[in-house]
Amino acid sequence: DQQVKQNSPSLSVQEGRISILNCDYTNSMFDYFLWYKKYPAEGPTFLISISSIKDKNEDGRFTVFLNKSAKHLSLHIVPSQPGDSAVYFCAASALITEYGNKLVFGAGTILRVKS
Amino acid sequence: DAGVTQSPTHLIKTRGQQVTLRCSPKSGHDTVSWYQQALGQGPQFIFQYYEEEERQRGNFPDRFSGHQFPNYSSELNVNALLLGDSALYLCASSHPGDEQFFGPGTRLTVL
Image 1 (cartoon, rainbow over the protein chains, first blue to last red):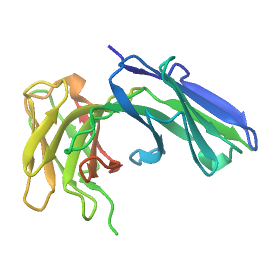
Image 2: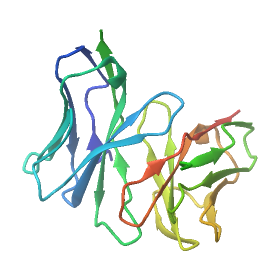
Image 3: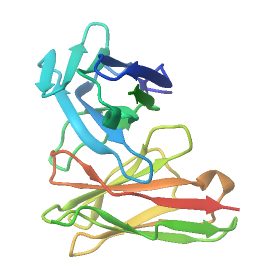
């Protein structure tokens, strides 16, 4: 049972344009969402997060949008740069405990930014 | 400031063998989580350790066990290896409730 889904295995975008990566979830208990970026031979790197009490969070070129009613979130990268080429994972967690979050990941989307 | 480190980088084992993977958390972190990433999939939560105890566990069999030491470092043990255990094993460290920082992973191949 895949609770977090990234339906696009890959995305190709021209440098300078917007990249939009999408993620859907099924578990209504999820209350915190994150995006991680992963380069080959490295571990995932935290990019940006959003709490379920918000519908938008922005950090520089990266913006995450959350639509709770649709159980959908998206990551916008503007403008896209060749260095953004990586695998992007959407992750979700529920019931943030004092012992930290158990993260549920999607399968990832490979982003290629062409120069 | 050293990040999360894992050893070994790569490992090849045969079916039925046992393996131990190691993780040193980022300086100042006391919580360690382990994830398994199979080819073409996202990381799957195995378990989490805090104060030397397993606090949360994912849907993995008892063949997967772990340990956390007083210095917060951690080990992941897998017994009776199966071909399906071949994956990238990721360790992540954090303070409880904070963002998790991942190590580069250990690539395990079971033949």
